[in-house]
Each structure stands twice: as structure tokens, then as C-alpha cells.
Image (cartoon, rainbow, N blue to C red; front, side, top):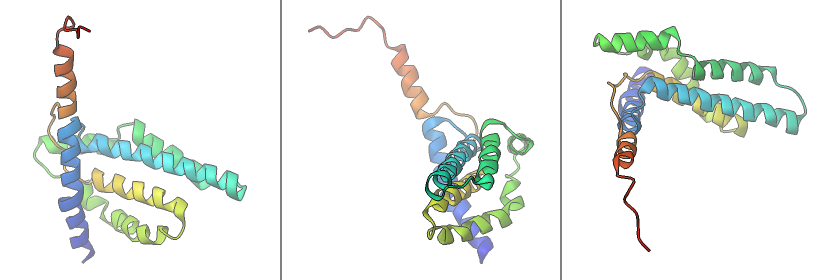
Length: 163
């Protein structure tokens, strides 16, 4: 049952969303997951500030997770390189099967996190990060946004609006 739910969320939700973002921006799913890791670091930072300001204590767990999330956002790991290499060979993303228990745990924590509002952003961005990372990598493309700006740059600079 949980495996079917996980496959549904990857195939029918995460993969189409990652493909749409890829078509618009030209950013593949690995880079999208790294952006989500940065969003997760921002959510942990907000949690750290909240615990300092409201509760009055330093949360070392949040500080550690900020560092881990920032590492995932700024450095391409061997996992990312392997996913790209496997995609060139025509293989599917191995993290789809490899991180299945972690995704299920994150998915089950999502309704529980609604009780404590600071955890919603953390669990939500972490869950999105892992689901996007489980998507298959798309081939390189320019993306509609990049194409628009390249066409805009190609316009002659002598075109002026006369008043």
C-alpha cells in the first residue's frame, strides 16, 4: 500500500512537476532538489530563530540540520553524479528505490507536523526535496525563460520609442 502511494506521488505528482519546471527554466530535477535543500535550510534557520526568540534556547539540532541542508544545496554529491551518469546510460534513478523508507517516514510525519507550525515548513521542504530527488533526470534543454531572454537580448538596441 505504501509502496503504491510512493510510486503514485513520484510518477503522477513529482515527476510531472519537475518536468514542467524543467521545460520552463531548463533546470533538471537534481538542481531542483538542490534548490529544495536550500529551502529546507531556510526553514531550519527560521526554526532556529524561533527557538531563540520565542522559547529562549539554542537548538543545536536545527543548527546541525542547517549545515547539512546547505551542504546538499551547494555541493554536488556522488549521489547526484551517479544519478546523472545512470541517466546517460538509460537507467532509472536508483534513489527512487534506495530512499523509499525515508520518503515514507517523511510523508507520515507531514500530518503530525501540522500540530507544531514550525515543523510544517521543515518537514514539507524535506519531503519535497526527497521526492524531487527521486525523479528521473531530464535531458538538457534551454527552457522557455532562457529562450525568452535570449530573444530579448537579440533585439536591436537602436529600437527606440519616440515621444
